Length: 204
View 1 (cartoon, rainbow, N blue to C red):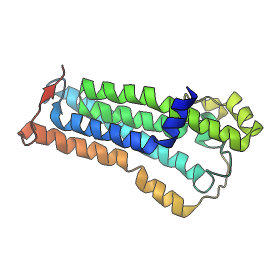
View 2 (cartoon, rainbow, N blue to C red):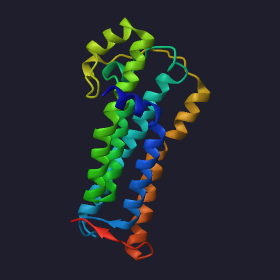
View 3 (cartoon, helix red, strand yellow):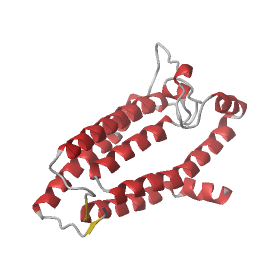
């Protein structure tokens, strides 16, 4: 278990890119699991869009609290007062939204399975690092704050908070990936419908 945690910590970016490339290929050449042109498509698109927007703004909210503080301070306010891993929580919400937008059972299942198998190790690796850096302070924070399911009753936020604006600017552009992916999926959907990109696999 420890070796897996260390491996995911060292190669997290590479693993994420490989998984992303596999998913892109699946999305490009596999079609929706149910026929389009009815209200179901519209309902799925609207719900998926809501999840994507929640994910983008949620991640931006969480990133604001660690901009300039991530390596030196234990962040326990704002979204971090309710849950220890708000970035991964909002990422999951966005991933579900993207998976729903594909309307593809196989793609949706792969996204959920990859997230469920991979990110627990990433979270454990990061929390091990926080324990080393912050010691007893992190242990106390860990005892009272849920790992992944927020507890709204714990919420607190300061009236003023200092951030590194340069890092926050980078964070702003990074969270745009979810809306951009949503728009890309809309384009791919049209390309499938017109036959420009062939649908090789359909999973009902």
